[in-house]
Image (tube, rainbow, N blue to C red; front, side, top):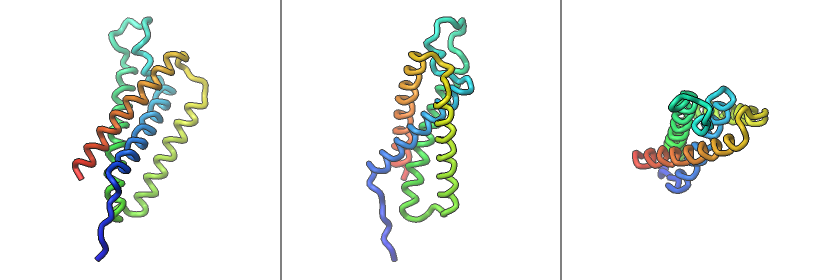
Amino acid sequence: MAETIYFPRRLILGAAMISGVLLALAVHMLGARYGLDLGGLWRSDTHEFMPTGAAMAWWLIATVGFSGGYFTASLMQSAVSGQIPQRMRQFLIAVGVLLLAGAGQAASAPSPIPTISGVLAGLAALCLGAVMAFCGAHFALRRG
């Protein structure tokens, strides 16, 4: 009987964090294209307490970062033992490539956000995605 092989926990954690951050940044770029602007928090011309689009963008980026880290860590743990069917792997790869291609297309177009606000929003999305991806991967590794 074959012995089960495991990836080192740090390798899984690192890969899951990278995956979660990339997905969070992709969602940030796509969301900014459709009006979900993180930079709305730093604007002084709005009379609302917090613009709805900015709040939705924060929650969306946090959710995608956490779930990306969690599911990547879970999939990497089960992939080593061969528990993921080949079709499922191909489907997940295709979804990831399409999401990142859409984000690349959105990033190549002129930005509707002012430059300084866009840079701050990108850095905030990067940090939020990294923290949430780490939390998701950590919870997946503790569960497994």
